Amino acid sequence: MIIGRRFIHSLRGKLIMAALLCLLLPASFTLIAGDYLTQRIVKAQVIDNENKSLELTEVYLSSLFENMIRVSNGIMFDTNINLALKENWQRYKLGQADPAQEALDAKNIGYFLSSIASTMDNVYVTVLTVDGHYFTNYQFDLYGGFTPANFLRMPWINGVKLLPTYEIGWIGLVNQYTMDGKGTEPYLLTMARNLRLAYATDPYAYIVISIGESKLGEIFKHDLGRQETMLLDADGRILASRNRQRIGQTFPFPEEVRRAETPLTVRYEGEQFLLSRHDLDYGGYRVVSLRPYKEAVSQLHSVSRLSFAVQIAATLVFLVLFIYMLRQFTKPVVALGKAAGAIERGELAVRSGVRGSDEIGRLGKQFDQMLGRIEDMIGEIRAEQMQKRKAELAMLQAQINPHFLFNILNSIRLRILLKGDEENGELLASLSGLLRQTIRRDGEFTSLHEELEVLRRYMELLNFRQQEKAALIIEAASDTLALRLPRFLLQPVIENAYIHGLRQEAGTIYVEVVRCEAGDARSGSEAAIEAGLRIIVRDDGAGMSMATLQRLRAELRSQRGATSAEGAAGRLSGIGIANVYERLQLIYGERCSLTLDSEEGAGTKVVIEIPAEPPPSS
Image (cartoon, rainbow, N blue to C red; front, side, top):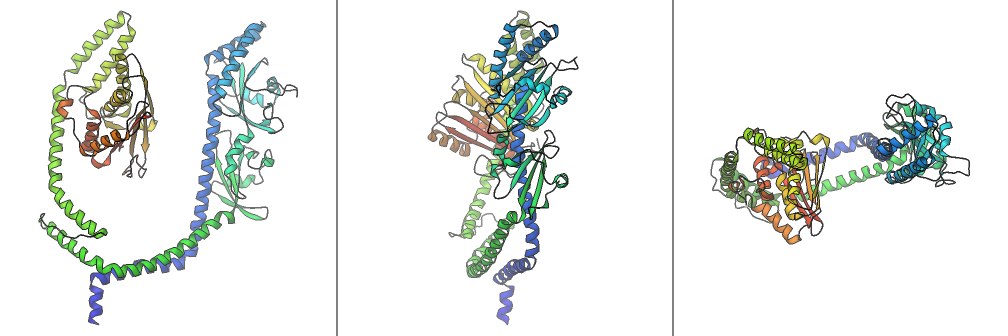
């Protein structure tokens, strides 16, 4: 009896009782409530899977429609095409035909349509004037009695004619009119726009763009089993489906589709189906999915039952192993507890002495090593603070009166412009803007927009020094431009890519800026701590060998501060990648990262990740 009480009150007994309570009780509760919860979870999972599938389909369709819009925009806003069409319209109104000019226009516009339509597969583009002249990138069924001028007699052209400027008319399905799809594809999905002068009420030309229905059908080929995903127009007509026999028919559940903001079940062909719907932003189109409910939940049910069985078996095995290993765990844990108590009393020289090949043994060793590192860390922190103060002092010493400098530079630029030398005047403006950012005193941080502007000016100055020009391509997400980052963080990286990557020769440097959400995988091997900013700088230069890359990575890990702040003072390009990393560490600590990737002959990539907001002290 006494032995039993001692066992219950001992650490070993408490751990066993805790294991029984934490593992057996939840398992018992799962047996009771599992069936009910599984049904709800499975249904929620099925609905979530259907939504994700439709979202993916929506992305593909939206991309296809956006490409059609992009092709029409390219035609609508092309100066040469609009000028030719307007002149044709004027000749038509005045009754002054010009066959030679019309032949030349047909050649030029036809070449342009073929070029711009080459960005998409199986896209058919027609530019049609109000007097029946047409320009296409396809062959039409002339012997079948069709020419693009027939569009002017089709009912939908009246609706396109009344569209406001820049609006798009989504026509839906029209009968096949090209030679490419004759006999194999009866329908084309079509959109149209009008071209009119700003002061005119009637258009002078139309743009008609079509894609094959089979192009849409390819998107639905991922459907499995008896699942069917279809594209409907606003009237419930089926525009695209894996089953091409349904195309042109009316969807059998119009009322249910209107109510399907969330997936619901319908009775179809004697079986219960799950009906899901997603609305598109184009022409009132909708993507709907019909999937047998049993087929959707069967796999999830089997996975759930298997998971539950594995959980019970693993629980029993774990209990046996836990009791067996408990004796081995107890002594090291007690030793670590005693060492922690001594440290709490201020005895930093104490060591636990716990060693071994298991987790607790490694924990004991790391615990002792941690104590040895505390004094070193304190010294490093003091050294870093001293170095930061020195760098700030060096920057202050290097500053001059900005008003004096900018007034002189602007006066010189004005004289150069008065003499007609605009190129050198612009270069001087770039230099003035770059220096203005360099000596600003309104804080260590700047917006991403201003930092990118500095990079553009800096690249202009670098190209001025060299005969061969290097290109700078910047792609920054719009929601990142207002975010703040350390001033002149990216200039050393650009300079490094220009000098060592491109070797001061012709080439391209790419800068890409995106947001990374909390939990996104970093470019290295660790996971992101919080939402932030990912900046990728890469070049198409010579790159570096694996040995050189490994050496540079090692320097980033071990040689922080290899270039002193005093050495960098007074010259814009004297910072270097090592000091960029050191500066990030001083500002953000472990909340940032800088990684290098390179391949010999394929260029170098630098990835910087920082939090979206500066530290509070900044």
